Image (cartoon, rainbow, N blue to C red; front, side):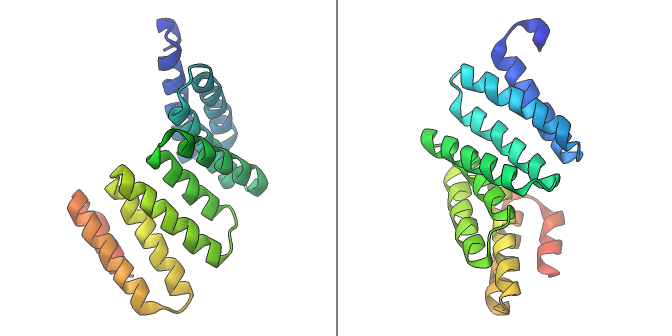
Amino acid sequence: ARQSKQPSLVAMSLYRLGEAQMREFSGEQAIRSATQAAALFHSLRQVANEGRAVCVVAAANNDLGHGAAAHRAASDALALGRSCGDHYGAGRALNMLMLSGADLGTSLKLLSQALAAFEAAGYLVNQSRITSNLGFAYRSLGLYRRARRLYVKAAEIDRAAGLVHRVHSALAL
């Protein structure tokens, strides 16, 4: 990408590298790559991609146990996503805010907002995951029927998305 001398391609490559590093639990490397990507996206005025890169920074900080840094980055990512109408990016940021130590009431609110964002974006896989997470939250409150309804709804979304392997795990809960 660097050889191409196309800043947009370099930024996207760094962003994807940061995501891969985060998923492989190489947090410090993920933060470096995603931070570089965010700076490049900022200079290119690609606000949605900047927000998504900042969300990777939040996730990597969360994995490293840096709660305050994760919360700050997720808040920044949410502001960026909302400022440009990036529903997917806003949904990811809302989910990260929920993961960064919110109480149960706040978690339910953030998850509901994340679900609405992913529905607006049309991302079925994320809708399913957030719906399942809502089920977990209601189960922890002892609201088992509501939790079960959410698990069934997640399984229906999985079927619609062709994710048969997730259908069985959602209904097994």
